[in-house]
Picture 1 (cartoon, rainbow, N blue to C red):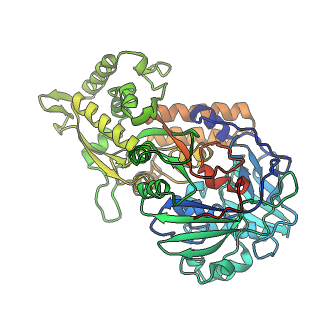
Picture 2 (tube, one colour):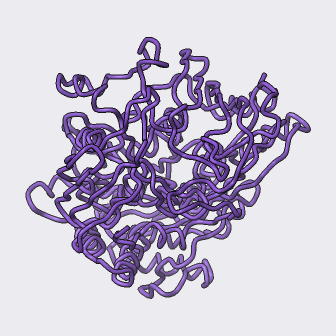
Length: 584
């Protein structure tokens, strides 16, 4: 297939991902070469009091997505172990030299769970749905509507033509996260403006009302209790012996109030496996005494950044998002560098439970971007910070720093409630206060923290894990790098044609990246993007999560990979050694 092979994702993965590669392989069409035994049930638990929707176009919160990613088919897929883009509902694709006109061939024999064919029209319908501002689906925002700005059309039932507004060699990778839904089922809802509410949790008999093109279909949903999935009899993948996937025939997701509730269900043997165990949950489990089962550590990474709000504007109610005086500080690149330079990142990382973090290198020091400040003495870093502030007119008083107008250097740090970020945030606050800033911490759930940073801009400084899943690093980095697609750095002044210097630098680098058609040029542009990111956003630590803990039966063909939800994203490949043994 003819494609633009350059991709930012592998470049990012080289820098921020840690892989455990196991030896499963795929054929040319992405079919699984391993083999397993069909049958059996698997019970999992997810931190959700409710599933928000049964519509994969709308289900973007982590818990709902964990379920719907098993039912939604996509044109392309991402290999969990390598990050390679593989065929999905599209068997092949090609593009022109400009990477603007893409042609995807729908896989022969691909069907929905009701037995009807998957068509190119379904693909065009789905793209139009997520790029339409009328629907405002979260998946469109995360993928970047600008990146998907397109004129999709079905040339025939098996040929999908996507003509982009601007060149985008990343399109096949983006489409791996774009659910495809059936046009015939949802066309009427799209026409009358109710697509956003179609296939809601109140849908009667979802087993027949909601069709799927992924490995599973929804069999039952009991609000506040569980979601039951059944193997899709028309799923397209086959193993080396020609057996249809998935092997496991029933998957039940029990709903728990939070992560601790999920761990409790594991500890009480209500579920077969527990995935993505953070360090605070390990502590909870260890407190319960010996737990049956086998622990498998599959390293995950999270590049933690101090994100600084440089939006000096007002919210719709006319209230300043950030106090104007503090907004002036935060808009100073020198002040942002001071926030990083005064921190002892090695000490912060060492304080994290289970040694779950390590310092990120290459933070610009004293104007020399090649020198890591932690290669120098921390005292030297703080001495340099004092010089920068004094040159900007700041004064060190008995109670701390004051700006040129005499306003006390005080601000709020937003962080999530997880054990790692709680420890980091408290350490950051302590070190900043030792230097002379007054800092308050606001702890909120992770989803709330990221939403406030990426959407509402209702924060001053935040501790955020941007690339917590390398396979979706590009998606999250787009939130922070592309001022056109999903702006973090937006200013009201931009509407009048003005640009903040940071936005201008990022926009230029991003244009270079998107316009480069060969790997060396794209690598150089990606390096420029990373340089800007490191210069403007203080890097704190590389967080490593514990991985998977398995109970009772260990699924075969388990391949810890890039750091996605390992048990659910490649669940179509898992086989149980005792499939006849029913779950509890």
